[in-house]
Length: 126
Ligand code: SF4
Image (cartoon, rainbow, N blue to C red; front, side, top):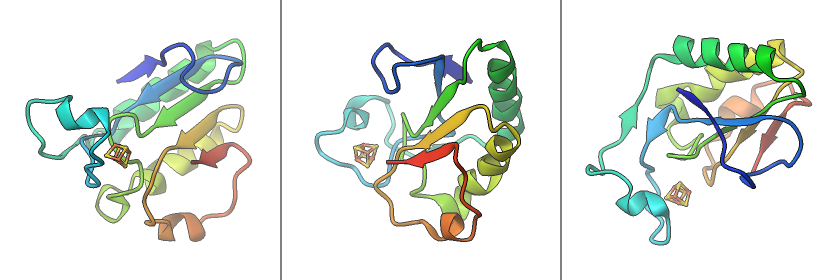
């Protein structure tokens, strides 16, 4: 599910959305709200990437200004990349939709897939 992001979540201009392909995070930072967010601390990976893609593209079409999409709200976007293939799947989606921006929020060093990817003006990582 792609949801409108809360006010003040990130960029100030244009529409912004977040989506979570995974729940919970391998890093377990003590200060993180995810520590008490869900009943289970198990990692849940949603593999219906095509559904996320369709909602992202629909949101891009309906936005009046360049839309920003945040991943990594309920997880770390890159931490399980070798298993999830998140960036491998979604970066081409945003390469095709260069009028939208994807921001990848991560503390992970799992950047091999990024290093193997041509740079994109509309992909930010922090
Ligand atoms: S890396 Fe980020 S998402 Fe993961 S536990 Fe730490 S603060 Fe939370």
